[in-house]
Image 1 (spheres, one colour):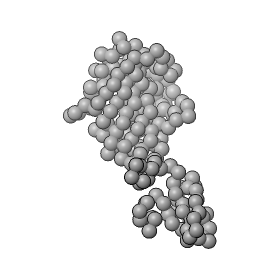
Image 2 (cartoon, helix red, strand yellow; image 1 turned 30 degrees about the horizontal axis):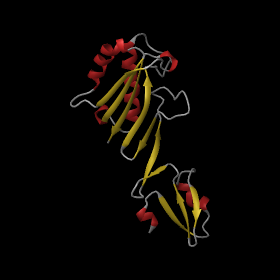
Image 3 (cartoon, helix red, strand yellow; image 1 turned 90 degrees about the horizontal axis):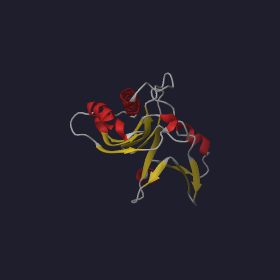
Image 4 (cartoon, one colour; image 1 turned 135 degrees about the vertical axis):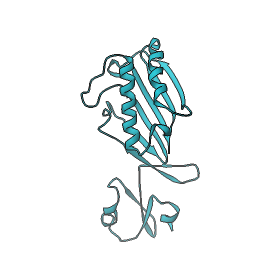
Length: 178
């Protein structure tokens, strides 16, 4: 019955060896015992206010630069993708192209790669945040930005910051919904 109520949980009869039960599941699952059953559940889930569990999946692709620190390129939570900010780094070379236009174009190539890995397209993007090292580059960034979308543009924030990682000129993060 628990498995019907909570699809990320598996009810296992007491006395069953968890390792045999988990062979078709993620190795990161862990167990809780009560008086009659052993319950295996996914720690990579988020509990909602109404006690439902929504799977949290890491999205990663080699077609975009690897994370520079302790974070994921993106997380898919239910039908919503939260992508970390994408600098204009070419994943093949690890280098920035020259200038704000080229870096913005590369940032969007990285975003497209992450969206593709998550089974989405740029049309699924509902919110962006653009970070600029110099607000004087806004018009050039905006010219590239507007070519990325068709139809309704996503909601957007654009801010100037003191310094971006690796001294990049632009970083763009997105939220997308299937």
